[in-house]
Image 1 (cartoon, helix red, strand yellow):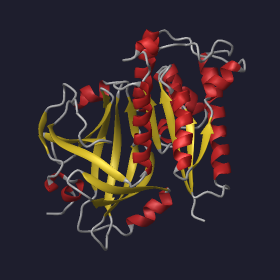
Image 2 (cartoon, one colour; image 1 turned 60 degrees about the vertical axis):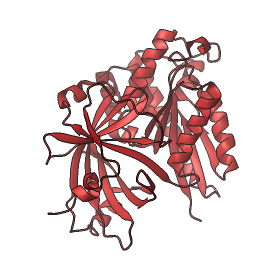
Image 3 (cartoon, helix red, strand yellow; image 1 turned 135 degrees about the vertical axis):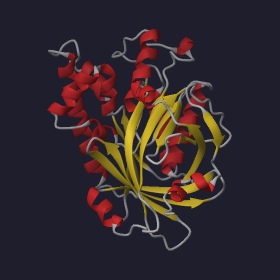
Length: 364
């Protein structure tokens, strides 16, 4: 039996609606044929059990204990899932390991994960997708409460600041979505289910993407922003025997990478069916032997940027010094886009074939 296991994270600021979201996720996705497994929130388990930042020797000691337990829990759930008699299994983590980064300084976080022989890229990108629910303290403060979680102590102001830190911590993940409070709570949960469904390809794996040509960005500014992360990408197109576009991608930075194979079929100017598969390094290297030699390998720096609850990707190519490409994936093709003030849009190029990576890869 072919078994597909997907692991996602539901995260968010305090009082964001995660508990309700978990119940709705289980109901919705079991109805459409998934076996849904939940990895409980590790911090709450530890704190209610007496292991807390204020009871351990240092906050770093607590965070190390939390990460160690989280890794083991996820390993157990993944091993168990691999034995189950189900074709589609969805593992839902109530927070992921990178959440811990919001509770430490960068140097503390680096020291803790280094002591565990881990690095940030492998910990962050070990999840297939991450969905952040914005705290009620941002846009729905009248509903903010600490009464439903004994481990929660933040004021609304602290909750909003922590929410920002969590978004910044996860920025850089290849599939990160922020669900805000622009609707009522039921609408917020519906938007979450829509985003998860879109990622899973239910009912079909559509990708709605808009692309813009922008002036060459201020890289020093981007790298100084807490909500921006630089990613190194090498993209290679493979020989395809039909009209599908097939590529493999190495993604990461500083020697730590993950690998994907992506197959795209165009449906309309801004909508396409996209199927993506995570690869091992050996699988990636094997597929490189099928590279399309009529196209150059694309190398670029991608700056992942969260702004106004939108997730932008700015691609900077070595052969341009006056322009760059900015992309945004949407669940609704009519959604309004509010660009960051420092981004200067030249024009939209969503349906301009000249600015597609496959075209940029063509050898002249």
